[in-house]
Length: 127
Image (spheres, rainbow, N blue to C red):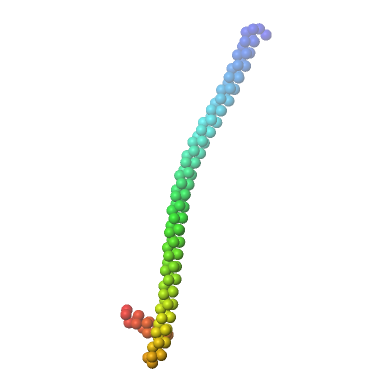
């Protein structure tokens, strides 16, 4: 093999290696481009999910606040209803005592059931 043959063989090997390296570089650049695109898509998705999470968190806070307000209102109404029942019971006892006193004085007094029926009749006449 002569020097020119050796040089030509080296150039052939060099050209072959350069071609292989160019193919590998092109393949790696393509993969890098795909990875950048996927990273951009993932970042966009993460941003959308983050925004949705913030919205959901805000909605949850608002719902918790409404629940708390409603629970307070329910407790207030329950207390009011209990107070009204106690007042009704107290008034019923007073009425009973007054009727007993009137009976002792000889007055004719209707029974509780008659009063309720009379009240119902009064209500229907008012309409």
